[in-house]
Length: 289
Image 1 (cartoon, rainbow, N blue to C red):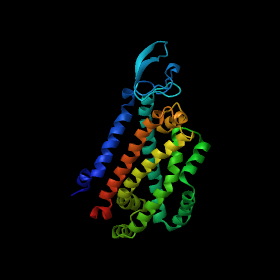
Image 2: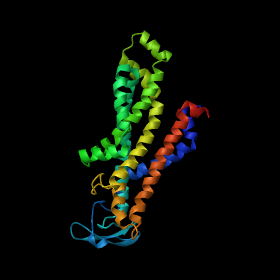
Image 3: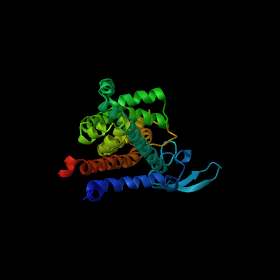
Image 4: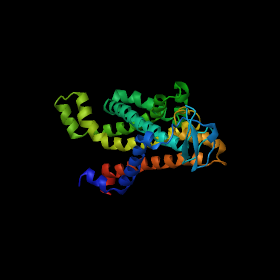
């Protein structure tokens, strides 16, 4: 039975993939599923309860009938539309952060694992980065670089790079002693070819699994940064800043916090389930079990 068949039969992978697929569809169709511009405000519709119907003022002075499925916030913005658009931002940050961390971490890990001179210097630097709590490092980087989409991605990715680097380094230390690598060296194969064609493909399975965990951590970290007021500005809706704005009036209007949380929790859970399932299938130790 090949890996694709095992993936298709793994319940954890199926559940995680299904939930994540639904969220991706929501993110892609947000402009059509959303009922209003997520940044549009109407002072006549401040703090509406979920399910309230009324009219929403337009820029031309007219108004149109509207139902606030998730209610409205203290600025009169439609929470339903903001949550849907927030799905786009959160998933984009999660997947982009994973790609950046995996790409840079894999390169540094291969260099550290294959070249002993590089290992001595590079891994001490990685150890220093890992000594700093990831959330504190992310907060410091966002404060220094400013709150923009790319700076948030960079700030979240940098604390994850040392973990990926250490993973790839440990794999390369083992793989470089394998007979197929020794044979490539005996044939005078260039080092970059050995790393690219012989070592990297054998490290891809653990990297893919690690990438899912990095993506889940990135979604959570972005929500924490936004909740603390250090994430993206309020005109770019994210689940974190929606909850941050709603926490002040949580006792009166709990839906302003609970509705974005209802999307955040299954997203992180689905990505982690997908990662656990991929590990069970792709890791030989777990596959034997």
